[in-house]
Length: 447
Image (tube, rainbow, N blue to C red):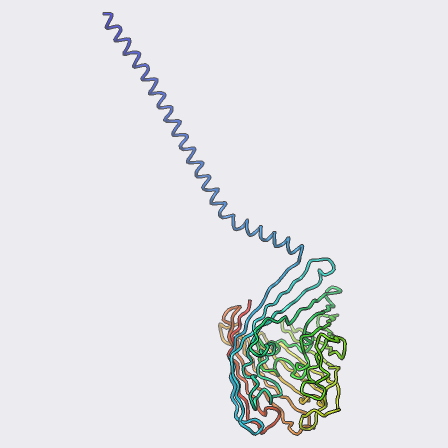
């Protein structure tokens, strides 16, 4: 009997312990499940935060860069870097010049320019701007010299202005062509520029016929050819006063190496453009009227210039006269007018001292057509005609006529290709000379 009670008590004890164990296990499992759900919830929130952080990272980096840029600009000012390169091939064809078989030069070439503009935020110069242009290039195309009876030695105005800044002899070294500082005064109505620059920075500009990189390449359609012969990259000081929106007046003075004494009895009077800077300077001034008819802009410029060094006077056969000398001077007009959104007109006229320059007067004019082909809104077509006339006292005084046609194909904002055609009648002002034909293909890249 006692054994039965003992067994019964043991069974009841074991059953009680097992029930409590099962209850404890259920509680533990429930807590584990709750913890698992909490971990999953935390992992989901962590993933969401990581995803948000990844999306915000570029914005944060951009904001940091902008703040750094703003801080640098506020402290040092802004620095802009631009540049570009031109690749070209130009060919020419002619028969006889000066009564003999003539050379027909051709060739490839390139130019490359790096331009830097710094607008400082420093005291005293915060209203100023520093500009520099570094140039490299080689090749002259149809203006290649060095051979007998060459067109470049006959023409009154050359065929490839792009090559003017290139150094000869396959020298492709870097050359600091321009380096000058411009300061603005009186709420930007007056600006003064000093440094190494060309007089053409202030004279004879034109909206449609002044940029040999993008427009015409023949000399008569880029600048007054005689004025250009006096223009060099030299120590310069000049300024522009703009009392009204439509009125501006420019004045400048530059040093000169006296380029037109070369090959004359006065050759020994030449000098470095950095020596005696204020001796016999080149002086010029220009008055510009810029009316605006709605959105159509125009510019009408009247300018005059004086090359203060002695030039050799020329006889009737264009040869220098020993012991005879005179100063160089000229006056000119350059105008451009937007007629419609697509059509722009330009014109030039220059009158020069024909005692020392062969060309007494020259005139040119033409048209610029933009976006004439549907879907090609940025393309430009240019057509120009020019006449350069020697003084009457010269034995050969026929007008030298130039015709040029180009079409600039804008492939992208930074890339363009331009086929260009030129023809010249009466080269050198001699109607007995055969005409000269020149064709160019130009590739243009800029950034």
